[in-house]
Image (cartoon, rainbow, N blue to C red; front, top):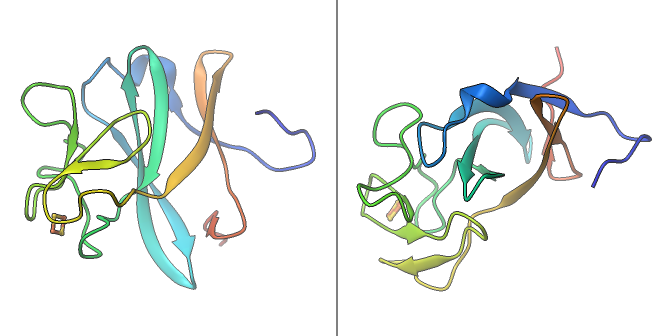
Length: 126
Ligand code: FES
């Protein structure tokens, strides 16, 4: 997953991401607009997505950084309750069943979580 030719951006220290706990949001650019993305930890692994529901382009979190529903098994959209698998971002219940969140490439190394921007979801440049 690590590619030395491309810039990686540090999102947070590993310790900030608790298993099925609060996610860490970060700013991105996509299709010329500012947006947010997030990373969560599930089954020890880190998973990141564009913070945009597959139903309507709304942010998912019900409180800032709160993405998991009460069982801790699914990521849930606060607007109409679509539920997504944390590993794949696939909607398995709700109005956009079968659709998916936009997955982002993240890796964990040296005690931190890094994001690899791609051609569509890009880093914010100042
Ligand atoms: S906007 Fe997410 S379920 Fe409708």
